[in-house]
Length: 472
Image (cartoon, one colour):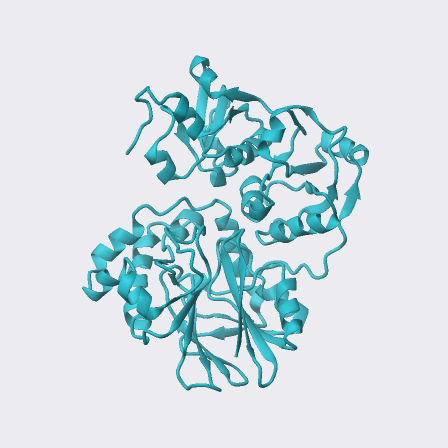
């Protein structure tokens, strides 16, 4: 059996290619939407991708199941559990609908679908058996059910999909799934999750890529609750201190359920000179994606540009800054060459931002005055302003600038109605990058935004003798 783990550090997302070397066929589980990596792996091993499936309707990225099926002719398999509200839509008309116990066979390899609700009602895990070696499963593809040291959060339907108090029922289902399906497995079964450290689909995911049933049985925070049949304690602990759910998750849920648009072969990106791009940006016909370090914008910036300063988190950050349902202008990325620009496009389409159509290698002639900033030692002298903290709730609770209003960077585009329009807003975070992303998006919405020149740590260092850092 061939088993390849394809991991995207940007979204902390893992997918799997599993192949039977007896007949050179393969299945991909939980693919992302830029599918070339799977095509390359299959070709490298001389295999044909004949099946593609996913563990559930994802919220944090746009599924590549339809894209990969269209490119390879592979049969799609999707869950048919969870009730009518969680039935896959018309985009999956050609898919095989799986219920608990359904098996997918590729030569000597069998994947058995196990309905493990809790994170979502329709969630499936897959028990993988290598029939050339054994008749018993040796692996579980756990999706967003069991992570290394953590569990898939059951509150996303409330936070991102318009649910009302579904978290409690989801948490109870998760308890049952652990008791009835996970802890009944032998300790040696290897657990291959769909996310790693940094994902917002759980609270505290481990950085190790895999685990085992036995390890989680003996060392996870949740196992003692299940062993003691303490469902109430489990639910309370599971729902405590979950991180902010990104606002774009709601869009992902809708599109992934219906079926993401198939992109097919992508066109070449258009190369723009600064002179060609300048009138388009000034007329707001194109939006520049400024990929420079966020501090470079302090001296000189492009009006109306979105700041995406970290190439390794480009998918995460563009999903915070650009809403394709309300912003219908093409994106032009600053990149050193066409290859790098294409890599940005790959990241963007993972979150359904398909608007990147071109690139420029220079900002000469496009730059004007830098974005407004304020130094930390000037902050106390300002009047008539709002301080905006765009960090997570746990960061804010550990300490923040007194009087700061908190709105996570991942929510500013969708919840800007919570912000004042009649005064200046001073924005900060832990490094300046999230603040830069949020500031650039809010400026496009007409807000008067000033970025803190520094970060919360800089402010705290200046005020170390003043008992103003609020904790708890």
